[in-house]
Image (cartoon, rainbow, N blue to C red):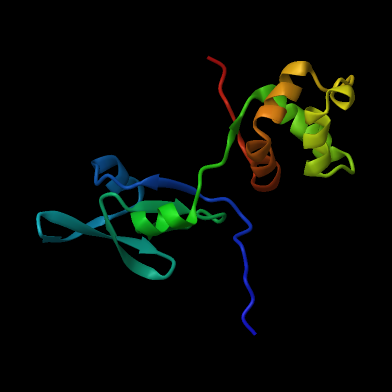
Length: 148
């Protein structure tokens, strides 16, 4: 019986631009020129694989690299949501307690429940305005926005 699985880890990836820095970083070698474009090859744990400018080079949990065609990458991966530092701290407070993401969003949405000692109005307002982003951050991980 076929089952459906989701990926359970995040990867780091950058779009290959053919620059000397990226060619050096990933030990890429020039393979062939076809139709005014250069096709490169790079070593992976599965052997040499082709990579073109615009493809993505992913880095796995053990530091391994592999190329992913741009079209496939865009269908398969999405950037982690970027959330404010105060929201990130509150998210971790909620996750440390036996509460669900649903309850955290409800706390931010219902004014009477939202004003607690642990959550400021700014955090409450952000979660209320961006509940889907908050849920994605809860489930998939997040990046903290940098102070400007």
